[in-house]
Image (cartoon, rainbow, N blue to C red; front, side):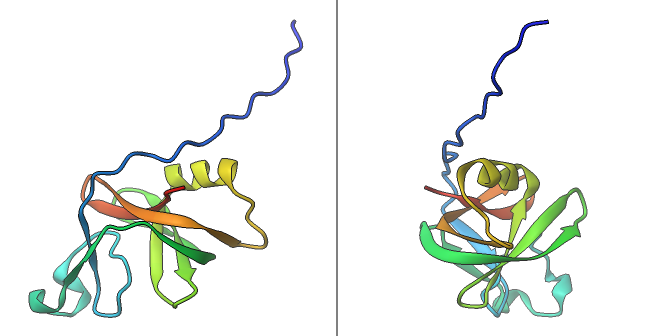
Length: 120
């Protein structure tokens, strides 16, 4: 049996061509956009997907319709879901101290779901 040093892959930000993403009336990113949240279609808004810098605090891990995801709260109070695959990338790229991490973020789409991801 050969002894090899453990290899840690360095995360490279995923390319992203998503132009807009849905937010609820409070500005929170909608993981699975649906009008079942009690507001009308006219109240659903779309944000331009520009990278932004903020500090996130982990709030909870939830189970959605198709997969589990992590919910983060930004310093402005807005909530952002994150796919577990993007959490894995985050864990190899940043230091998370007691559930808090600073970085530059953007939104990705997978299937019908939206989630925050590390942009840089």
